[in-house]
Amino acid sequence: MNIFARLFSTFTIAISAVAVMPYFAIAQEIPTAPQQQTTQRICSSDTVEDLLPPPVSEQSRSPLSYLAQQGFTQNPDGSWTCYANDSRKQGRYYTLFKVQQINGKLVASSFLDGGILVEGQDNRSLDLFTMLIEKHTKTNQGNRESIRRYLEAFFSLVKQGKVQLSNRGYLFDQPSGGVVIYHPATGGKLKGTAITININSPQNLSSSPV
Image 1: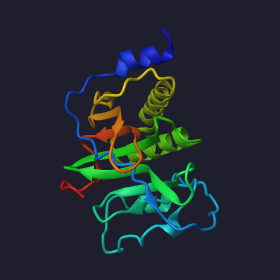
Image 2: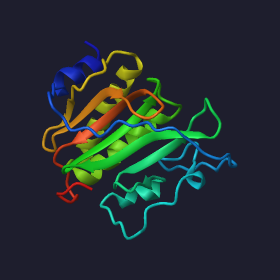
Image 3: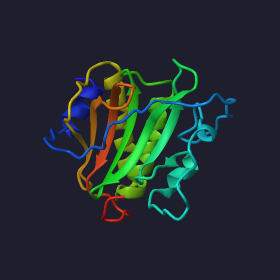
Image 4: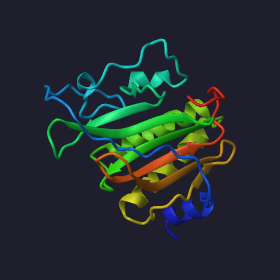
């Protein structure tokens, strides 16, 4: 039995009903602008910051505001989004990552355009998920390292086509009720799939929806 099979036999659980965010990978027409220099932030490739609407006022404080330091943009609904340029059509962008709180649950998605991860997306997705797990669960460093290896194996299985699209959640952290899901992402003009983590009992977040 290989390492991936062992990981799934140890950690997986079928979740019949899990809260997941609206799976929108929205493409929009935007004016052409010079390319921005990339950084080491999670939201760092194909930066489109200067092409997007102005960010939400600083008065809209959020327990997820630290994502702004990673290049994320806060939306009027309180969610935080990382945009990427659509390589197939100049002057268009779509949602690459999205993080938000829904009914007290923390939900974060990494969108696969056409079921394909863009270059570096898997590692940056893991960095994002690990950051959220560190800040909003009671896991210690050893737990987080194990969870990251598990999520890394999950991404690998998705890329190999060994995980079927569904709303089945695979448990990665029992105390927080954290699950990872590979599911269809519909809405907007771009169709695809998404890998989503859902932390049912997050720490350091307000109890009401953002």
